[in-house]
Length: 158
Image (cartoon, rainbow, N blue to C red):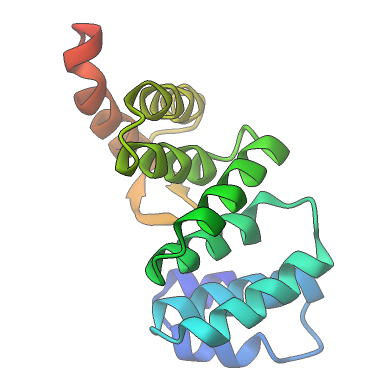
């Protein structure tokens, strides 16, 4: 399922998510991600909700559901989901980055910077060439470099 998603084969990943032979949480989660990438937001929310029911303490479906809420301009719901995701898994890079972006849109630059720094610290512990869930088009090294650039004005580092 994840391999299909990472290969950009979203329609196959979404369909495979309905297969009861897949491990239930992973199937629901990756199917929801694939549906979201296909622009099928309502179906993605449904599958993401199923994933959340199967793993209520996982930051992964919470972060996905927050992204989907933001697409519908449901800021309050997105903020609640992102804060919960970060609380449950402060080592989740995607949750840190998305919560930071959420704070940035709200003009809360101190909180935005704190989340970016947390994400950078996590990324610096990863091998440079690994993909980061939620940001599959980026490697950990490239994301870390981008964050260093964004944080440079306030740190004096580059």
